[in-house]
Image (cartoon, rainbow, N blue to C red; front, side):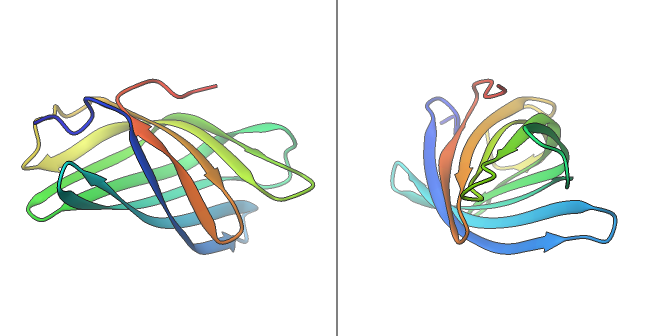
Amino acid sequence: MHLFVDSIQCSGEVTERSELLNGTIQLSLDGEFCFFEDHWTVEIVIAWNLGRVGIVDISEGELVIECAQQELIAIIDSGSVEVDPDGGQVEVSAIFKIDDFTGLDLARGSLVGMHLIIGAERWQGEISGKDHRA
């Protein structure tokens, strides 16, 4: 069974929002989704440079998806964030490259697309094998 045959809808909590001394904003997100009857967890970390307006490139990112004895670890390949200056909502469109995996029918270097909407405390979005870059 291939995890990314279809798009996966997932959601979760913003567990950390940091403004680092070097002018970088870093978000840590924890979430979950169900795929068939399995319960999967998702951990996402993304960072971008503060102070730029409009669409900003993601400078750092990691994606970890786990279920029982199955795990996927991916690093940012490319992507962008756009912060709503009025409400603070963040829209993320990104591509992650699979760096390591266990127990999944995947290939190292394969790409995983992501589109997220991140609020102050919660996030939701889609993860798939599709290209979600803007």
